[in-house]
Structures are given as C-alpha cells and as structure tokens.
Length: 331
Image 1 (tube, rainbow, N blue to C red):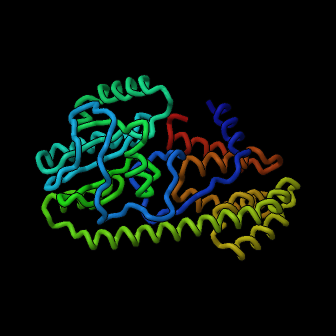
Image 2 (cartoon, one colour):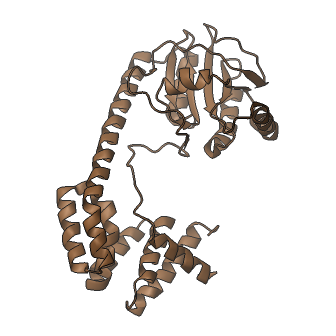
C-alpha cells in the first residue's frame, strides 16, 4: 500500500548515488556478469583468429561433437542456469538454429555454474535443459572442472558476461563475438553461411569497438575518481543542511569535472527544493520527461525525508510513487 511504498522510498534515500556507465549501444538484455573470470589485458582472442580447441566434459543434449570441423559453420554460445538473460535468449537461438538447420551447428556450452558439487551441478543443468524442452532446440554441453571452455574461449576473448556467442566460419576462424540477440550477430552468421562475410572488415570493426570500450572505461574510472574527490565536502554540507554551500560545491565540482552532472543532480535538487522551488521543479520536470522507477522513487524519497517543505512537495512525492508503480507494477 501507500505506506509501504513510502517506507521503500525512504529506504532509497539512504542509498548512495548509483554509479552509471554510458554505453555507445546497449546490448539486448544486459548479460549476466560473473567476477570469476577477469578480462585479459593483452593477447585477447579476436575476430579473425583460429578458433580455440573445442573440449567439453559432458553432453547434455545432442552431440557428441569431438571437434569443430573445417567446412562447417558453428555457433558456440555460453550460458548458465542462474543467468536470466540466457534463459530469455535460448528460444531466440532455437529459432535461429531451426531456420539455419544443415547450414550451421549451434552448441550451447554451460559455464560458470555456482557450487562445488559436480553431481549436483550436473543434475541442475539436466533439469534446466529438460524444463526448457523444445525451446532449447540445439546441442547442449557442459564445461569441465578445468574450465577449458571458459578459459580458452571466454577469458581469452575478454568476455565477462553471458550470454555470449562465438561464430566460427568454415575455415575454423572466429568470425564474430557478441550477444546472440544483436542484429550484428545474425548478419555475421548469415554472411558466414553464404560465404560473403568480410573477415577483414569485421576485424577492423571489432578493433574499433574494443578501442571505444577501453576509452569509455578510462572515462568511467576518471569520473569515479572525480566523484570520490568531490563527494565528501558535498555530503558534509548536505548533512549540515547548508544548502547554499551545497550549490556552490556542486557548481565548482561540475565546472572541474563535467562528467559528474548525474552524481550532482541529487544534492543539487535537495538544496533547490529548500532554496529555489522553481529551479527544483525545472530539474524534476526534466527528469520526468523520461521517467524511470529509480528516478521516481529516489526523488520521492528525498521529498519525503526533508521536513518542513511546502505541502505541494509531499503531494508530488506521492504522485512520483504512483508513477513508479505504474512503470513497475511489482512494487
């Protein structure tokens, strides 16, 4: 009810500003990430390189396939039972495999399962595949205790999230690495099947994407360092309710580090609600042009937490909670 939602909003007020990372192009259903396999800093497996050896511990469905044969195209896709995005991708892969039956072999490789009991994990994967039934209409196998597939394929290519798919062309080379629901994946697969895939151009595009990702990671690290430098003084001023000082510090921080605009929005809004209602309203309206559950609930929390505000702000807080519920009914 409204009381529970208000309490949820208040709990959100205690959370620190979320760390955000801009993406040039968001992947469909962001992949689940495991910290178990870190990104290699050099010598990455790349598009155009020979595919690593294919060695798995156990076939769950279809197979066995001892090796990736020349003259055949393959999709080697990595997944895990705990990975929500993987579950959503599986029916899509099945449809791709159906349409391209006899033209490309699809293999789902289970990796990164959580736990040490091998027999229990085998049973868990078997049950998962059985549950998926016809929705998982391609060969399925498991990585071994030596994590050969996770290491020789995923870690070697710097892939930290699943689902991730490798397309291997008829010459045994890596033709594409990426999320299997991206348009680029389908284009690469059809190009490989047709024999029209430009491997040189694909390698150049992959190199460019890798350089852009590296630059973005550097920007993100710089942004986090800048916030770490600016945050203590701002948070101290917020705690003291010295709102004029909050605005001065926020303006100075943004002038020095323009990338901190999102982090500074929260303390700036808190100060303006008290000092300049019109400017606070303008900030709120800008946020609500494209509302999200996080924005609505976070702003509502700030408004409900601050005592002594005009009545209209508490009314707006309740309206924001209603909007959040409309966006995400499970709240």
